[in-house]
Image 1: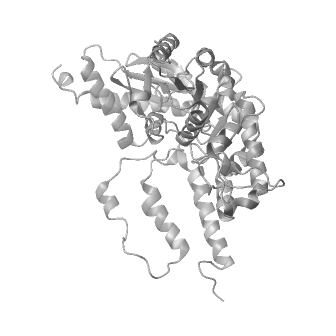
Image 2: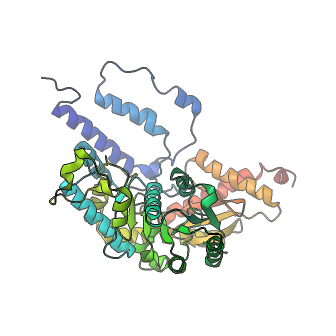
Image 3: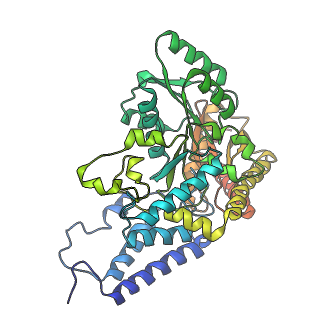
Length: 474
């Protein structure tokens, strides 16, 4: 008897084995593959048959079509020479965990139907709490990423404190500024605190702005600090900001989506001093803790404040309130239907051990410090901000060119890396000017990869210098 929407066991195994082979092949041959290339609109337009498929197709043929026509177009953000944005190295154990969680279709919203997953998520969240230095009584949940983590934290702060002003910096992640709008916090209630010479939130300016608002009758809601900015890797002075927030009754939220992972580093965790004093922390294990995408986490110093903000009562959830039911995660965030995101973090940490994660984080920091040393000894490059938490910014040094010509060359170099495919480096802007930005967090990226990347950048800088009108007339 044919079961609707169910493959026979042999077919499921055939499809699953082929999928596993494709992933293993991808991971084991990355170095022989280009990082990626620019999208080709004409190619993309002709790839897919847009007609609704009434008849069935062999599932392995469907998978092969996906690999050939869809996955062949992606930029490999898990490539050892993907040095743009914040890389997403992931790991195979985490990918298997996602497959198992999806294959068993685990509903991780409440403890009645998934008591084991609820306990595992609570344990895994507590591991992250301990690493971040938050006290007993803190807690949280896994979410899709740092954007959602910050939205949850700020909403909890608002329920607890009431409406007020939110203080960010110019280098606060743009998704947070956008997210405040989702919460109904308009620009009139957002204050942008100036940066110091190290691109960190300026504490004295924050004090002044808080005092000005208080005199105007505007109470503070929260201060959003950053532990590892996307642009430069800078860490706001968390200890000092915690003092200011305590004095002014403001909630301190730390966006640690990228840089908080460095608490694992014995050598560099001092940069995150004060993280444990935050009222809430946003984490992104799918960045520097090497998980498949959609593994974010929010931690709140007093987990009961999440329940006050999100707990849901409904007649069809009555049984989930029984005393023997573990934690209901729908009470801690906006999702009722949730996937079992904690499984990949738990399995990865149990499989590899925390020391392996520590070595991987230190490895990324060391690679970017090596890149900085190389660029400093080259007359062709100017360091703009030094290596910080595996982020470095720089630009071509061209003493004979005006700034706008150097800026144009900087952007051409970045665009050329995507066309070239051997390495990918992108730009950001500092003080209104573009800079090249390099971020290396992949545990398989080597010193040789970094050296090759700089050789490629040297080559592309020379090839693109003649595109400037000034160079052409010299």
